[in-house]
Every structure is written in structure tokens, then in C-alpha cells.
Length: 245
Image (cartoon, rainbow, N blue to C red):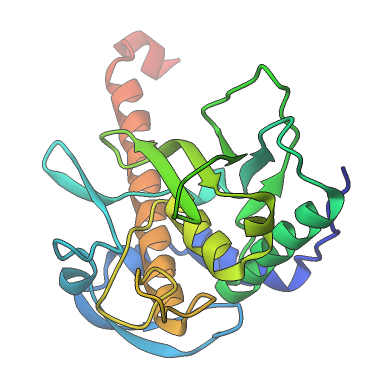
């Protein structure tokens, strides 16, 4: 099965901002003006409030606790693009695949960074580090996503279930479920592809992108802090002789 070629040359600066300048997100207050970097909404200023985004019943940003430290749930930027594969033997045609990856490309263009990478999956394989897209009977629901994350908030074992191969052509459903696979939840606090009502937008809105970039930047800051903590711990465990030599 072929996948459409995607050119990400113009998307790199947005990702570079999150990787190279993570403390910019980490230092922002809960209620602040966020400037989007890269993508369709590049340089747009959006007022964000993490209290609103994490409110019970409307948790676009999910939180995990680690030793008293609150962290947003999601993929660490250094683990992006996340591998995505269709479950084998589900009748997914080349046309279905092209439609699905076209929608994911739109998400990446909106976000200004590469989020997903196509991989193949053997029929007996079920890796935890791959977002697996399955075609499953879901009754009246078009899609359902199950995600696991650890105490650090790092996402793994994401499983996206779609009702039929025709759902692979549905921009709203695919975008909604793949945002779940990235770690984001529902919200009713602003017009969002993560709204659950019948009139939700079909694609990521400028506010969706602002909060998503904020969360990814925060995770980048956490990842960098964890790295230095591991280095410091390793240094402390070294003997005096080892340090001198």
C-alpha cells in the first residue's frame, strides 16, 4: 500500500521552536497570550488559560502527576513524528489510505510540525510505540480511541478504532480521534474539533493549535529537565576517583 508523499520543509521551524526553546512554554503563566509558531495560524496571538483547558468535564489538556509535579499528557516532541499503522486485514484500500493520510497532512499543516509517520504492521504485531488504527464495529459511534500514559504523562499504546473504512475519509472524525491519540481530550470551552456536539468544526481551530503547541512546549521543557536530572544523578553516583579521571 502506497502512502502520499508529504513535503515538510516549511514545517521544520515550528518544531524547532518547541525543541530548542522549550522553556518559553514552561515559563508562561496559566492565563497568558500565546503566539503560535509555524503552520496555518503562524504568528496568531491566542489568549490561553490552563484552568479552563483542564477543567473537569472539559479537559482538552489532560494532567498527570509525577512526584507532585503536574505534567500535560502527550507525546514528547522528541518522539514525534509518532508511528501510525493500520491493523492488518481490515480491508483498507489505497484510496482509503490516501484519504486518511491527507487528513493527517492537514493536521500537520495546521500545527506547523510533523506529527505522524506511516509504518507497516504485521498481522500478529501489537507494538506499544505505534498508534494502531483499526476498523471495528462501534454501533452508532464513528470513532473511539483508547490511550495509555505513565506517571510522567508520556503517551503509549494508543489504539484508534473507526467504524468503517469510509470513516477514514471523514476529516472531522479522523482529526478528532488522532488528537486523542496524541493525548488531548474533549472540550466545550471554545469552538474545537474536540467538541462532542453535532456542529463541531471539521479541522483544528486556531485555539486548538495554541493549546496543543503550549502543551508540547511544556512537555519539551519537562523532558529537558529530566535529562539534566539524570545527568546530575549519574554524576553524583560516580566515585571521586572517577570524577578526577
